[in-house]
Amino acid sequence: MSGIEIDRVCNQLSHISHSDWVAIKFEKQIPVKNSMTVRFCEAVYNAQKQDISLSPLDICCDGAKRCFGWLKNYDIKLAHRLAEKIGITQKSALELIKSVPVQKEMYSGLSLSRHANGDVYISYANPESAMKLIRYWQKATGCNLETEISSIMSVCGNIAVKSYIDQKISISFGCPDSREYGGIKEGQLVMGIPHSIACQLCRVESKINI
Image (tube, rainbow, N blue to C red; front, side, top):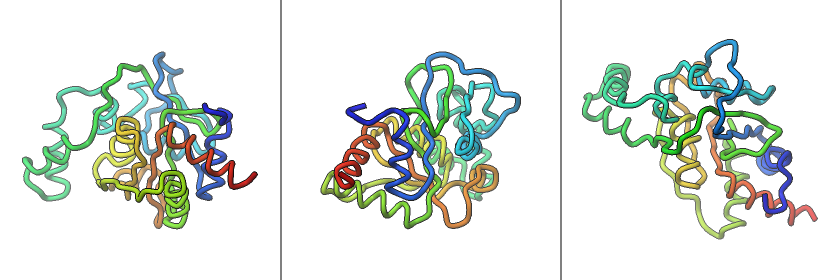
């Protein structure tokens, strides 16, 4: 953890951005089964209040299952749904689907918590909170943030998986399903940070507050 206590990463990120953060951990062993199925974006929202464990059977969204590597050879069916939903050709829809990353590592489930370390940290933040976090990124690196924005499988694929695979900060404005079911409020966007960068920002925050 490079000197960052495991139960303080979310707290320090919250102190930096003034928004709530949830740690996402890719687990090798299957977590305890939940009593009901949820969308991943909904689980992120619920994890702001209680720890959650998800097995593949706990997630009801095919897009999320695809992004986490639990639903194979499904891009064409997802593209057909997307083409009908937003009124584009199936070819264009398939290209958009294929641009969303898929987790390649083998693992059995996900843990979500505000009180543990994670592989990725996610926040539903307002623009001012996002600005504060990016300022810390600029203090830490001296660079501007470069990112791609997508409104497809936004929280699962283009935040959780993308941040982990690329090891970069990711930003999304959500997708229709995540805004309807996932608890993203009006005026909020979604931010994802891999663990290594989260620790880097926390070290900057610690030095400022010495």
